[in-house]
Picture 1 (tube, rainbow, N blue to C red):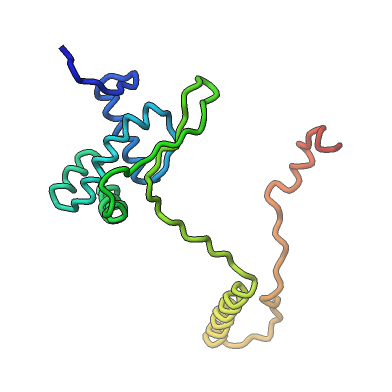
Picture 2 (picture 1 turned 180 degrees about the horizontal axis):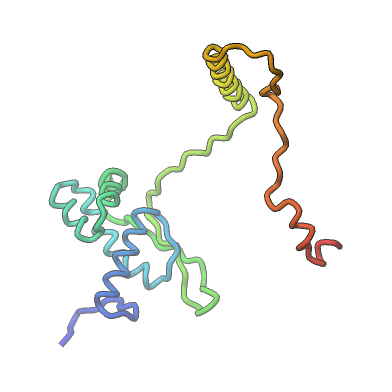
Amino acid sequence: MRHAKKRLQLGRFTSWHDATIKSLAKNMIICQSIKTTLTRAKASKQMVDKLITLAKKNTLFARRQAQKVLGEHKIVNLLFNEIGPRFANRSSGFTRIISIGKRRGDNAEMVIFELTELKKKEPKKTKLAKEARPQATQAEEVVEEKITQEQKKEPKAVTKEAPVDQKKPQKKFMGGLRTIFRKKSDSL
């Protein structure tokens, strides 16, 4: 008899079910926030919580237990070096499930399954026009150095050469084909 052996089967046989749960746990550790169905999130929540608890211990045995589940050293290192220390002050509640509505095709309840303490993202650095100019001057200096080195090696000839600064305009790839294959709607 199967008393008190309830689990979310996910409509799969055992090995397929276990592989789905492990895959969701790996993706959760890598991305820290994934979009999935409610039943899959509930099924994988227990596995993710166990992995984070192992990461808090940070022992060799705990690393080996996590390695059994995750299977990749990079993911285990990410779990123990970044995620584990983030949850050092917390005893439970490592993940949360946020409902986002139903999926259009099969009306399945979709959720965002994420860690409660996400990694803070650094703002992207944009290049300013002023910063780009000094880099261009450095590139010009390198070109000038190469030219002077070549002149030292070769004796000076009286032939006229085109200046290095002049550049020919580049031809566009498939430049003339656009007019041949123009749609009727384009000409309106």
